[in-house]
Image 1 (cartoon, rainbow, N blue to C red):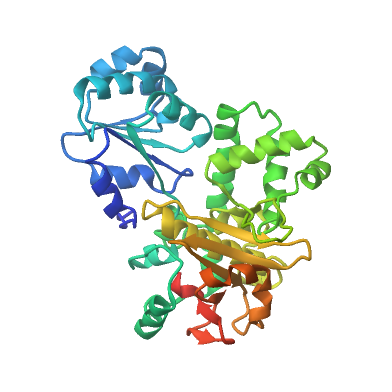
Image 2 (tube, one colour):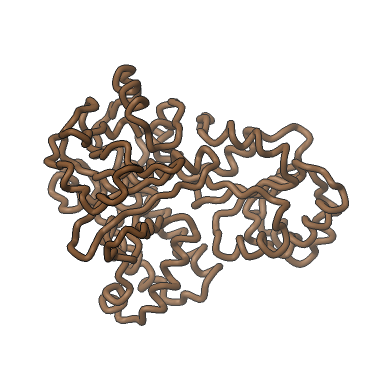
Length: 405
């Protein structure tokens, strides 16, 4: 495949000069190795622990590993040999230099423990997910939320448009291999992705023995996308205990496949729901798990709205993470079931958004009344939908094209 520039490149190339080690994390097959190998200097050695011989050397003879491979190094799939971390720390402390180690890891579950124990203060951890829509089109993507002035400017420029149909964008997902290869069997790709992830990764990083039951759990989560996490309900449906569901969910979250959107905890005199909502970081995987294979099954699916919401939330999440930032994103629901799909806190302001699949949504200022006491921090209320133009719906509520994300 031809290399396709990633949004995070600019930030990454600045940061490497300030830290001894850079760790690029994220789900499998999102392009971590491809990105770093593209940026790699000629003097840096590339080592992949996917190679069984090199992996065994790293696991059982770390001293010999580092005799053979000297920094500057790019070590791919570092999670397979966490015993390398103490040796990396020794190299860093003895050499006293920045930009020594570039590391990638797909499985965050065991990986981060080793990083925190050995490389605290010595490593910059960044996250890469699949392509955002703008990134795939080659358009610079800044962190969302936007001021009304920025939205008005974007409206005048008419930059990114949803050039293909929205269902196709959601069905294809964000994986480089799917997006950059015309004619690929999308269902076949995701079938392979699921089989590889379940059979290889889950068995290696957990004690999950019944992978068929775990796969049922993953498919069940797809039916709950955009919904609050209810451990008891999931446990009841699968006939396991809630602690097992929480452990399995942690595997998916820390592996980068599931995004938990926390509940807003603003102290403004309301009784708020505290459970997080769940989204898949790749909508192609979610639609595959739901059995949505083409435009026709999409048209007949009851999951169109939740999947569009999933796409919007993860696009915004990527707009922050691919610029090296941690998003402050939440949702809000009070005891009267008044809900706001997405709240972003940024620079002392609060940006509340509803997410609607209809391009003619019926949403007024009253819909956001749960945030009335925070009015002075809210520049406007937004409704993100697949419309073409920025349009006022009421005095303070604006309809925002999804293509602005």
